[in-house]
Length: 229
Image 1 (cartoon, rainbow, N blue to C red):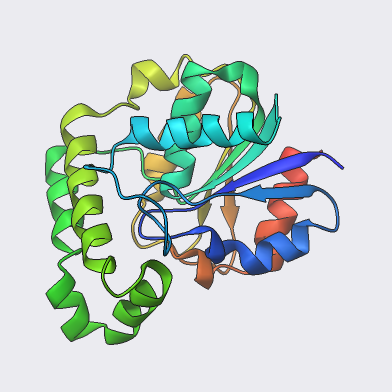
Image 2: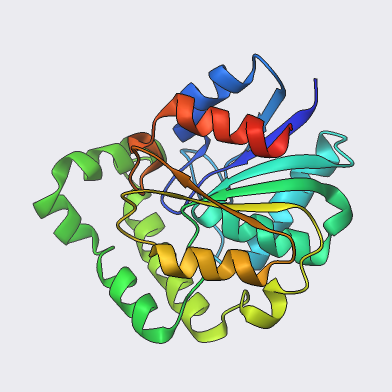
């Protein structure tokens, strides 16, 4: 069976894909990884930067003897996959992103980063704080939030993916968005799909931004239709 690599989002880890991986294993060989600093025991870098996460993917591909792979990138995972496609298009045969925000600017970055205050999350959404503690460890979850906020500010300042770079992507791409995504506007996702040569735009019915709130069967069907057609 053909290999597929699942890339998780910011604040996430590979365990977010347990249900999806089980479903996709019926039709393909599933690979997944934790980006640096994510999960309970991964080394935390000085800063969360896209270049570090791109390197994580390349190292995983090489370690597992994957010369080429199809990628499903959720949220930040899709952003990292697109950056990999820019630099090493020979390693990716097809890419599907879901809920990936590409329209970063200083204002949007500041707004999103402000939502990652550990104390506010602990006070207002304790269940989410508990999930982060379980996912990354009680001594690390605050660090993950703080470094993710820093990465958002970096994206707002530097915008590694803009119109000019997206127009140079030379692999098959589908840009997908859940119909009730509260973080990524449909207009910005559609615009990105227009800029990427030959890309398609797809709407996932019955989902929100969080991958846990997207229907597993719907995501699996989208993966199969767009990556294994």
